[in-house]
Image (cartoon, rainbow, N blue to C red; front, top):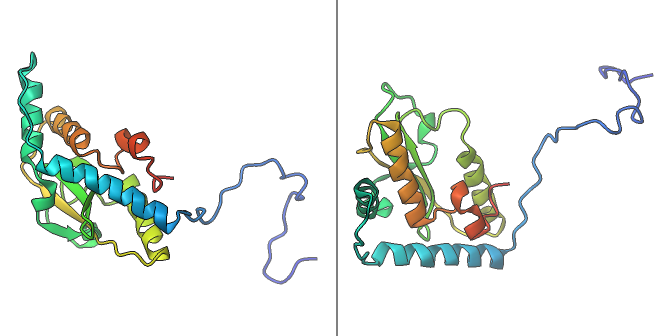
Length: 194
């Protein structure tokens, strides 16, 4: 007999024991305060070196690759105007322009993610893995009462052609080693992507 309002199961618990089950809530990220702070410090120190280093120009057999790397050196994500990371929730009247976007924790500061888009006002609507990484990152900070101020900055002078835009995106990811980009997960042992 079932309680009022409950639906009867067609199968017993024994019959469904080996089936796939979806968790209603993801498991909480567990990271200690010292580990979180040490991880952030390593990223910060690396990115500060990148920001203030003078890059020696090396001749290249591939002039276009050299041009891409030089342009990547000229873009300073930390100098861009910031918007709230939830900018995509605001109503917009246009789709936007080709752009690079940089997810930055201004509390340290740390460049967490580099992305590219053909429509700067539309890219974050819907699914985007980085939203989950930011949520995990913020939750880890809240659990230890550590300040984090995650914002996003746009560089609106990106090439219209997808291949050209993606080449520069790759150069920016390689230069800054942004820890939320998949290319850098093993380098930083990024804990927020699970």
